[in-house]
Length: 524
Image 1 (cartoon, one colour):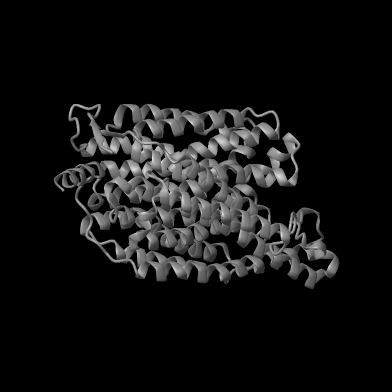
Image 2 (tube, rainbow, N blue to C red; image 1 turned 135 degrees about the vertical axis):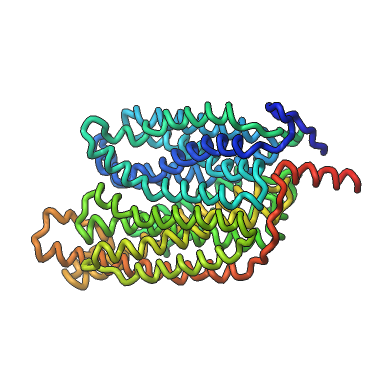
């Protein structure tokens, strides 16, 4: 199987892009990344209004979020594999195009059924964007210089994740916009990103005449989707975590994934090459990425609920209260990236980030209904600083450790497992929160309050002052309990990154490394 270089669509065919060209291309990438990640979180504060207007049920409420997340997570490995085989520029424009189509359909949806279908299209497009952005960066920029740029991307990812609920709340509260603009707002920016990339992204294309392992892709997608559906539905409203239905979902998902491993081990071009896990750095960064996903998504999802129920804040104010975490992540991600580029040392930032992230989780385990907003802001900033130092630098460490031909698969694997950690972590921590609220409500109000383990979210406006104060305290205590459980999970990331061996950062771009590896192989 031979690789045939195709000249780049630039005057310097096959040459390294200049700093100016890199910055111009990154502008399009970051714009596309921002709107695709934003789609996952912008609906958080708009969901009650959407469900009321379209006449949806409580189960639809959950699926509007999880459908997009399922599609995004399950398709990331396929996008990563295609990036190793086909034009990265074309693929990233295709993913943005799918996102535009999904966003238009969602913004104009007349009913919940069409809205759910549109969220699948949005998720597939967002999965491509989240996987391909870092792959394209690795192709353009050597790992030695990647730190400052990946720091910017980490900041964009974090800001989009955390700012989504704030933007959604503002759009819903603005009478002349409304909830449909939660979906439509990304369309002009996505089109602008496509046009910017067409003009500024110039990469040599290496085409290989191979067949994609579609059976492996199907099994991976089916197995992951089964486990994600289980983690989404398990709980008081549908079926118990420990039940026959739960066991069937888990067994089915694990069997499909076991078949996927068997197929992948025999495929000529596997979707996720199992060989990448022979690299200790890759295996450890995958573990840490799962744990970062739990901390990142769990922190943002449940803190928003705590602000609204325990502290009595409006959706827009709750969104504004997430700003300390945004700023912490933004500053630490950018500064760490710059320092890595300057000194070439990266492990210290992984270890420090994991320690600070764990510290942030421990600090948040002390909150309650009477905790002051300034103190909570400090705790959130600490968590944001830790995640910012850790998240994108895990990708940098893994990319620096694998052959250029496996950059796409490795990058998408880390993105995939981080999303998996976020998805399953949010569901599991949500179940913990619901169980704690139910037990506290039963303790305070008697068995009737927690009958059936439903732990329904109360409408505080309809409660008398005494009962309202009790429920505010219950949710404050339950949220603190959640972070107390999350802290040891975050500490596992400290252990994982401590065992990563620091390797000097390469000064060659991904394309230059690929050419060098190809020349070396030809000599042998």
